[in-house]
Length: 351
Image 1 (cartoon, rainbow, N blue to C red):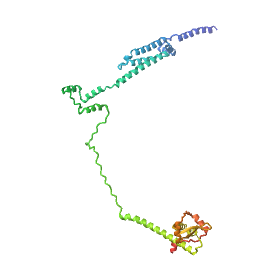
Image 2: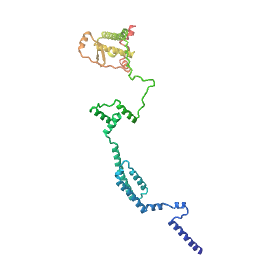
Image 3: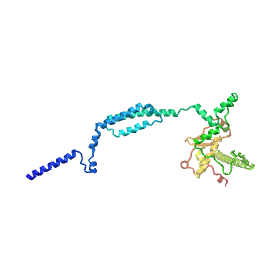
Image 4: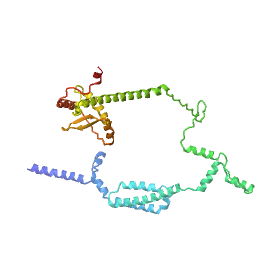
């Protein structure tokens, strides 16, 4: 028990000693230990130092007052005091920690910005200032005209001045101005120059069109005329032949009507049936035959006499369109019981 109490009494001073070392200054054993013990608490103490805060605010106020007092001198283009003030403000801004210091920094920035804007405006206005009379005098001197010598000559000549520029006046100005522009080098021909005039236009030779020969002119119309005449003659002959059949059948029994379909239909050939319908239409068109309906409402055909033809010219004619197909053709053959054709084919008739 005594050992335990004695041990506790021995440990107490050690703990107090270590606590005293933490609260006090760090032991100066070596450089490493001293640097490692400098922590955030020390930085916070430096930020809260009233003396350092007052010093920073005082320096900001001095900079603001110096800018306001030396405003006219700083507006001079050769004065760089404004740049120095901004550099000092940047150094002070590194130690700014409180709102009052930041407000002073913003105030200095506003004053410096206004001063810089006014200085830039003056520089711009001075740079754009243009004196026409000074420019004209300088231009005349470049052209080779000396106004002093001209005045002396004017006095000697009694006030008479020709007022003309030298011949190479503008060439001199061009030589002075060409150095300000990037121009391409002049082009030189290795084998000499050539004439810049365009070549004379070539005369166009009009080609003479070949006139068609007389034989070529006559061949095609003759052929077409012969074709038309041959076709027309064949059609007319076929129409007359069919008219002859119609008249012969009518004369054999004038009281018996001739069925139109029985007259034109060829039960052995659909194509000849179409041809018979085509040629029979010419008879009806020219008034050589007529169509009418019998009691069964079926079309019948009959020839027209010579006296009836003249009378039929004055009367109104009616037209109709007849369509026929192979199916209809077969149905008509079966319905009318057509065994043989009434219009014999031309080849069969010749045989």
